[in-house]
Image 1 (cartoon, rainbow, N blue to C red):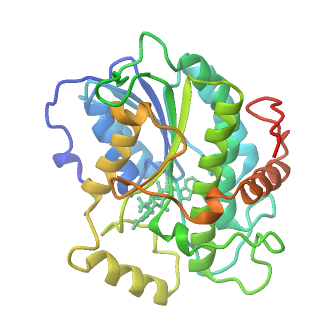
Image 2 (image 1 turned 135 degrees about the vertical axis):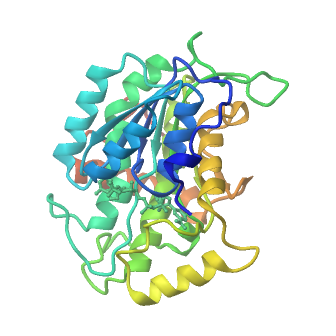
Length: 328
Ligand SMILES: NC(=O)c1ccc[n+]([C@@H]2O[C@H](COP(=O)([O-])OP(=O)(O)OC[C@H]3O[C@@H](n4cnc5c(N)ncnc54)[C@H](OP(=O)(O)O)[C@@H]3O)[C@@H](O)[C@H]2O)c1
């Protein structure tokens, strides 16, 4: 179930003081729990969400925590708002040690964002693409610094303390199809298929970003993605069709299959803070186990196409992190 304020602080020793983590989707579900756990460990959490009331309530729960939760209300469907958010975050935080692209939605009806883009693709994939693009320079400066905690050692599999871009994908990524002739489901929209496509895009984006960071010689940032598991009791399926709601409810409550918010949240916290993931770049972690993502996410031509189409849709130069000639 969604955690309540009474469950929140457990008096752990803060070990993330001086760390700033940007977390989208912080107002509900696993993101809300992650925000609380990180603040409990001393981090400053820039918590992004759309719902003002849930955001203010979340911020208030951290009043006595060792760290802080600053709520930043933003509709990630709107690219102008994503740019404003990024500018505000850059002006507010001198360091950004991690970005968790965790916000997500599923929708039974095909609707469009203020920019005229299919909403699931806009929020679940393009917003992470654009926000990462905007925050990457600060992440690069913040990674590998002496103030960074959570860095590993060669012995425990870490070895470095880079900044992290963590994107919440899903086990449904391997059901997704990236149809470049109709990326936005103008024909034959299906909510579950659109959601699965967006989650495959998350994995494809992550692998491509990791490769580009490597190719550009950037060792102060790593990019990884993960599947938190089928979580009981979050809001993600509320906007989807009754068929999807029934299906996902059955899976989430199936013994040995579904899991709870606490476990899903712990998986994201681990991605953001565990030393071993500071030493990994471009991996997909499926319910705690590294595992190859869908073949599309590993296909160079598919990755490049998605990257370039995404750049065009958000209006940025596709040559980022910087102009690296990727001979393929
Ligand atoms: N639940 C599962 O079984 C499951 C399984 C695999 C992966 N995931 C992934 O886990 C992540 C978190 O999902 P959850 O289950 O915790 O869902 P949730 O309870 O529905 O939380 C979703 C979060 O995303 C935010 N969000 C949605 N649309 C937004 C928009 N346009 N602008 C800004 N924020 C927006 C919501 O903000 P507001 O509340 O402020 O509107 C909320 O904080 C998602 O990426 C989801 O795809 C979930």
